[in-house]
Length: 575
Image (cartoon, rainbow, N blue to C red; front, top):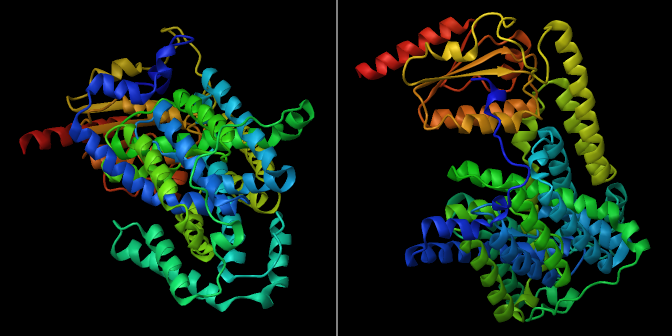
């Protein structure tokens, strides 16, 4: 079966794909008290995780902690209620810290509100125009590069609160920020360092020895208790911000002028881009953990409505949160109701505990964000990509460096352009080496096609064996189609033959999609037999460890792979 034969035939517009999962899941499966109880427990668990994170992210973004809580409540509820993912948890995330801080620094908080609402409108339009299918085409080195760069910026932004430096607001630029921290080094507060170090050590210890406990909340609460009991001279939410309000504000639309819209268009586009990419990445992670399928365009519409609502209520930008979504799944969530309940639980905590939050030391929230930054950095994945082809390494390092040293928007633009240029260069080389293999496969009459067709080859497959014939480059643009095609092959066969004779090149994103499929086959006990790999593609797969799995075998000829598959099926039947 060729990859291009798996493309679904869908109508130009189908309104049913925009029906939220919160409606379709209950309509199709019903809803019992046991399901509600599981959702409530999962929602409470995620709310406990989200509470300190929302405040920490808001403070790191250059605003007050209540803005983060408002975002977790309003955007978190809307994303779960209207979204196309069954388990998505929305709210403020670390990915937005860099952008939000820059917008507030340049245009003020009112500018951020308008930019967030504009971004919401862009996401709405993107979802209606079904751009969710196109976001999947963003190369993985670009996403990993700017995510790792954001992690570095988040970490450096917390140096002031980690060490209790006595200084004015830090500059937005990376190098200038480090210079300002160095100039204020003589103001280091030892009690602050002790509180931050203790909170960080406690979080790491709980993650290692008691991972089911809410480490962030315990560290933040414990730090607040110690600072209050010992009366330590450590800056708190109350001393810097005056506390946390115990009520939601009324919605309010910001002042809009054409000049203001023009100024904020680029940051609004960056917010929309990040929200779209992060939310769909989070939904894909949830799919991988559960075997479910999200609807990307419905998810974009929900993200758009959520950001508009968050801006109207005085929140900040929001998107799907990968770590909180994973926590939701592990906690036993059954439906999107869990995400809606998580938002309501955060609201209850905000209303009931608002006065107590004033005692939270900023050093403990900085410790929380240090852990968030480390998790965001995906250092193992970063190192893994450094073993890929030279072009992918260039894209990865360029996007990372530009994110840290210049600007996130510039980094994304340059990364995508670089990836496109490198792809065209690879295709030119591949065409010179293997003529007749093209990116777009065109129709041919049956008389001019040499050899047997894929359908004729399938007639000789033993029962329990599946075969895919891949044609064209396995690059970032084809990675999502590869995953979709593999979905159609389940339930899993005993052996899976992948024919690579028509694949002239593979990039890091293609390797990533293939590796996810190979691991899924390994989980289901399916042997994967690869045949006809050209030396270049085989070299890339070997360097990136895709051929090291126990369930993968490589053959020079398709006939050898077919014979091996038959032997596997026969031996399994005999057993």
